[in-house]
Length: 244
Image 1 (cartoon, helix red, strand yellow):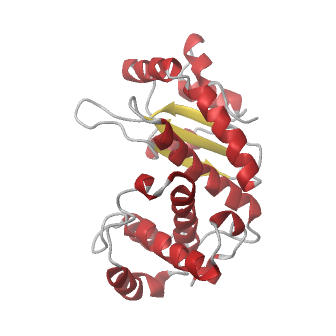
Image 2 (cartoon, helix red, strand yellow):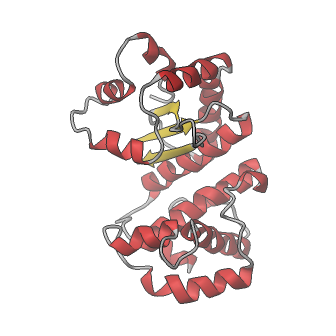
């Protein structure tokens, strides 16, 4: 499994979407909709230019080295990792993003990305996959999502440095965060992912600050790590409730 050589896909004449489904032996296009929602570019001239830049920078070789390194560090599963261009246009610059599942990881990268930014993105998404493999029972509440994201960002801080944390992670003082958790999150920790409130609280819609859920998750995980004097690789199987 490991790194899928998506750089070879450009030579076939088939779209990226077709090749993903072919590789995974899937017919249901719902996965493609999920990938686009999370930042995957459509197959076009701009995406082709990004692919060419990725080839020049030997990104697939670098990603393979990262996979070998962090699979050992996290004792993680051997799953396919897809690296593809991220969505952008003339008005909005493409940004790095990704999405992880229990059995695969997708990374969406822009034309300009440093080696450490690529590493941080991979660490975040692969940490999700490792946790999904280790967890016992369900993973379907708001608290589960917050802790999943908080652990992944804490892993980025541990392995790549706090300079590579997402900007919304460090935008709150501790007192502000405690107040936000108490007033906007604590009573809703048990709501299901299917609830309309879930995404509002994770991404910060309506009365909640933008991306506040990620900051809340990081705060809870960071406090727990400090208390236990331990790293996130030791917490991959730790139930979400333990963090509160």
